Amino acid sequence: MIGAKRVLAVIPARGGSKGVPRKNIRELAGKPLLAWSIEAARQSKYIDRVILSSDDPEIIETAQAWGCEVPFIRPAELAADDTPGIDPILHALSQVPGYDYVILLQPTSPLRTAEDIDACVEQLLRAAAPCCVTVTEPAKSPYWMYTLQANNAMQPLIQQELVTRRQDLPKAFALNGAVYVAEAEWLKRTKSFLTEETVAHIMPSDRSFDIDTELDLFLAEALLKQRVAQR
Image (cartoon, rainbow, N blue to C red; front, side, top):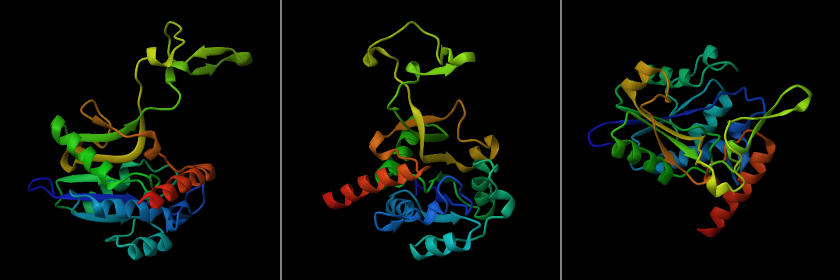
């Protein structure tokens, strides 16, 4: 809870992933990918209830085996390739009412910890903001990125004077997809975690992996095995 206010965590995991088939239940450092998010959520000091939103029987069974509630089955129309990411969260809030805050935890962020979740909540409270999301500093600055025009002519993505030292560039941050926290009623109105009212919590890059490819799985497994060995 946050004070006297109730907090719901939603882990969305549909069955039709394309980049890495069945990735939500792929084994990663001895556990299904999904289990890392369930465990982090259950260890949070703020989350009152952790639920799964899924259309897939095998994913549902796996989540239940790892201690996650599945109070409903996600409708097929909310599990399509083109379904906006916010829709399953709004659906979950309609199915499981009575919560003041909602936390979106994507299963593709297995290196995110309970401490990261709690720090994001605390940043929201410090800023007196309705929403907080996690970000990380990218390895490559967008100020050094280009688009390619006709004949592969290079065009700076961001127009500015040429800067040759990274430390002279403006700081830039990217969403890492690990934690999204919002007031439930505010989210129902805005239908987006990202507005001018949203604040950010910065996470380190080594916990900001978003699993989208087989290479991501390989690297995440190495980092998770290292974390387990250090305990």
